[in-house]
Length: 154
Ligand code: DQA
Image (cartoon, rainbow, N blue to C red; front, top):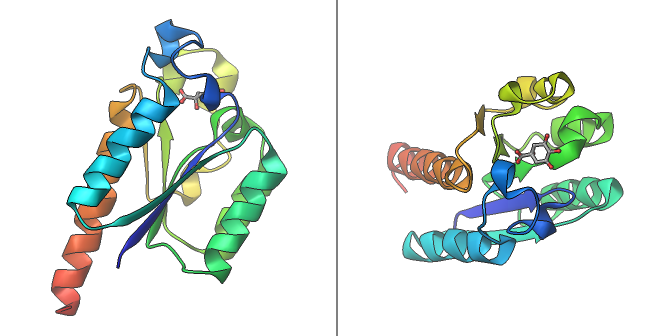
């Protein structure tokens, strides 16, 4: 069964209450439920995790490569986008294709948010569509999984 790992970074547990002008009013559990529902319909296994800790995110990325390697990672590294060489290095080390996601358009905000330590390694970056950013990322990953399995004849 195809698998997707979704990683939410720091402060995303506060979605719904946190700066709704940037991040909307949907809570993290509502967003996760939406992704789980889509994955269930598509018969794709989805593992969704959130941590405020950089080291935990690094551990989860490393563990993904050791266990049932997911086909793809969808990651919103949140503030670590702009600071974390460690998360960049972990993603580079495991070599699992990933999509970087942001709820807000990081290019329309403070200048420090415009730089990401991950974007040049990502398959793609989706930012600025609120919770739909995750949905678009999910649809891209699902379609590339389906495409690949059709081309492999599996
Ligand atoms: C964010 C943008 C980051 O700059 C910020 O630190 C976040 C959330 C987003 O989803 O728009 O926490 O990644």
